[in-house]
Image (tube, rainbow, N blue to C red):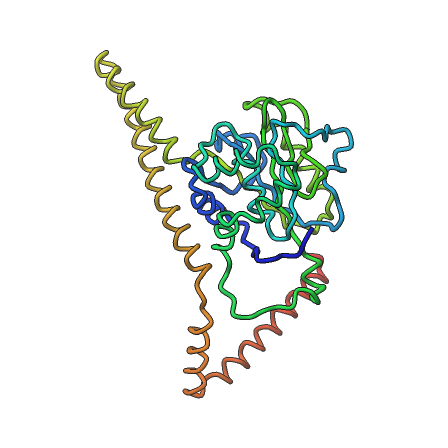
Length: 332
């Protein structure tokens, strides 16, 4: 795999991934963080088109080797691309779901790309992603503004903490693990749209169990149907049911259905607020705050307050360091 080229690192965040997908001109979807693998949590997210799992990458590990009994034959029905450049795994994990789910309406750009590359081998598909101006520009639109250039070539500490994204997707009656660093798509066995989330749960849990108990840096996100669209579809159904109940003089049923409708309208308001927050947060991610910080430090220095603040910060840092040492001694 080649070096980072001009692909930046992007944050594992549902707001980032949701906007990234929209920039691909894909409508009707969103990404939600999955806080628990329990059955009810996953049930509440349905319909789920695929899962994106982030974990600490252990160099040189082909994840397909974790499934020695799995079928690694390239299935023509599965869109699988090798990852040929660093930092592209987040976008590739998203594309693995978008390009394999029959329930997602791709925009014109992705439809054309999928049709153009459908007969490519996995390596050439990876090259096509890397060389796509659309995918690279959308991916890099989430680069954090950073005026400092770090020497990643000599930063061994950074190399010790590399993270990687993979996807889990139900495709044509089988559950697949799609990892651009693997030898091929990993067929984890038969599944249905109803039970694939139940079957993927132990697979993810087993992956997490391979790390020490101290390693908690995992992240799981679900690519799901847009909640507002889902709620509005249900409201349309409720309007018909309410009218039918009124025609039948079923007053209690009318009250119940109206209550459900009001609950859904409230959820729509919450979704709109959440998306406004996503937009604001993504804007802040791109903003360069260095000039503001520099100006604040300059004003503090001009008023003779900077040195006092520096000394205070040093004392607080030392205090926290001692508290951490004490906690470790007590085994907390």
